[in-house]
Image (cartoon, rainbow, N blue to C red; front, side):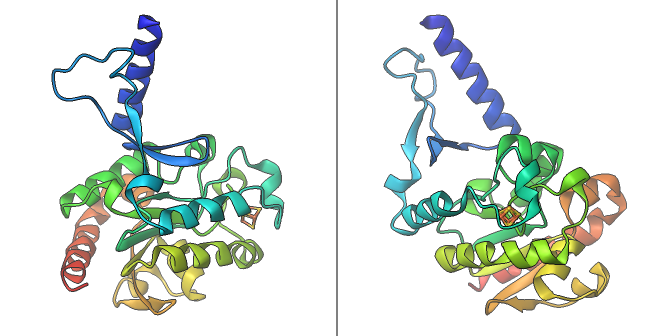
Length: 243
Ligand code: SF4
């Protein structure tokens, strides 16, 4: 039993370090909560995953969970045939800030979580730079299933899947939406404008201010864009002050 507890502890610490302090167990989003500093993890104290967001956050969390259950087996488009996991979304169901990417990549498909792996860790650092943690925001994609070889979403796939995101937005009621990357911005706004043009002004999506910035994976590939990304983050920080 002691070895099993140690293995679980190591796994959770690794998971939290690599991804986040939240994970989904039996369909319920939970937060990893550790015993007090210095308190030894034992059979009794050492069940670190104890907080259910359904308990600590009101109504909308349960509604999101129920919506997840409703759509998680979707077969509306061909992408369902290749998915390992349906990637619903992740984070604080009462968040003021919603990040939207285009679609799950390989690691997201493996984990069933959006923005994991190196791009997710960079997103965490971007959040930290403006005083936020992943637990403060909600993160989702336009498509819930991974396109083969990470190709761009097809218009038909976006048309089939976008209503799921729109319903998530109705349930979360964010004050600001941030589209991560050109494809996410173009797909939401139904435009072919370049990212540099999309970044120039705050748009609206479902009557909510929409900011469009670089995808963290693009920043990893092209670090010279980080300065412009920082400008976008500062704009976001200012916008958050007024919501
Ligand atoms: S991408 Fe969206 S519409 Fe297509 S199967 Fe997945 S959940 Fe359904």
